[in-house]
Amino acid sequence: MSEDTHPQTDGGTDTESSDNGDPDRTGGSDDVALDPWGSSTIDDYPKLFEQFGIEEFDESEVPNAHFLMRRGAIFGHREYDRVREAMANDEPFAALSGFMPTGDPHIGHKLVFDELIWHQQQGGEVYGLIADMEAHSARGMSWDDIDEHARSYLLSLLALGFDAEEGELYRQSDNRVLQDLAFEIGSTTNFSEFEAIYGFGGETNVSHMQSVVTQLADILYPQLDEPMPTVIPVGPDQDPHVRFARDAATRMRYFKVTEAFASFELNADERALFRALYDALAADDTVETDDLRCEDAAEHLQAFDADADEATRASLARKLENAGKEPIRPRVRFLDRNANEAAFDALAERISGEKRRYDAHIDTFDLSPEAADELAREVEIDHDGYGFHTPSSIYHRFMTGLTGGKMSSSIPASHISLLDDPEDGHDKVMSATTGGRTTAEEQRELGGEPDECPVYELYAYLLAEDDDELAARVYEECADGDRLCGGCKEQAATLMKEFLADHQEKREEAEAMLEELDIDLSSDRRGLGGEDEDEAV
Image (cartoon, rainbow, N blue to C red):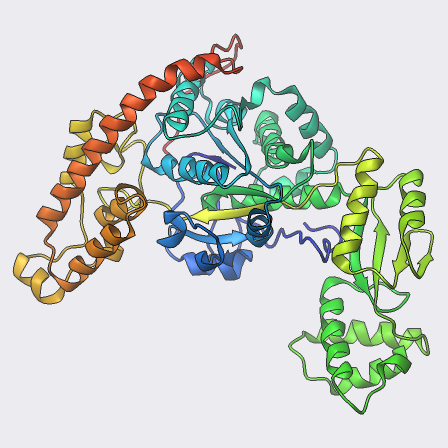
């Protein structure tokens, strides 16, 4: 989950989903591969919706939406609606993201800095972490280099407006509470999951696997004192970590809260099919659902036209037929996943209204799924459980390299460091590739291609800041042929020079703030160190 640029067991819960999907490093030739440690580029963002279940982001639903949301830089999410609702209702929520200190912070990192700061300004509990264990194990960085780069990341984050008194900054290697949580999470995972999700094999060092478990703990860390909706702002290459953490949060819960209709259990696909059938029957004036029996539902299923595969339809029919004359009665079911005996007894006692207790589950007929999930969480916390919400996430697009293609730390001209001399930043923008036509005459006649232009991205993601009018004017003038690339780059280069000068002045002012923080930036660790790999930024 750190920004380098940074099997579902039982169907999850109905009220909070768990989603691991297909392995990230295998599949057909047309599949998108998400590698948290690779040089990631995404050519087809919509494919992520279909392949990995990422949802399309709708900025119109977010109050006071950040300009990265308004301009489409943030394109996808997982269950961000729960964070948005908490924000709108003045309820607790959190945001966390991390940074692997393998080089200088750059304009790609600024996207995540801005997202964290904005969530803090909206009232969230916000955490910024230095993924130093990942940098050492996955990149072979020496601890001295890690210390130097960690300091630089934190200075830029503070200079951009992160409030360290209201938020929390930490290093993975120094956070013992985090490491204890990682140990507990590790007891719920196995090597086959690392193999399927990340392509790990016999050559993968154990410390690399440990750093992954530590990142899962990072993602859940904001909920240790109080479970709350939590968002992880990252690039899409970090989605494997997010999904793994969502699974971990689910499997560590004491109870699974799900919908049921009879005494037998349905899997997620069967449940969705039966819910659709039941709703259709309830809307049919000729059917009395109060008197509906399982064998009756099986007959209705045969004629029911629904988008379900034949295997699901057949397995549901068998279960309904085997249940015979058992009445259909919608209910909420608490399944015992990890609860101790005291917690199970306490849950049974606290459920109001009609209920039925079995050896491994409790059915309630009067609670909504939302109320049931909250009750399950309260009981869990009262009996020394975590009660985690499944973490949410938002995903931003990768910035295009100034030279075209991907931004890479090994190609200085392709990116702008937040530490670059302002004059160098100006010159890099002036040398950047554009979406312009071959000649000025052609540009005026056909218009430019701002959607293919790294310089327009600089306006949209950084230079225009909150000025939507400026971003829109640059886009429209380019597309209409009224703006030529030379003048556009000169304006952008001037704005970049001003931004870098101002940012570096604020970094100097942040030095005093950093010295006051309880974070050790002089590691006394010893270890192996090596050269950094090429990386997407």
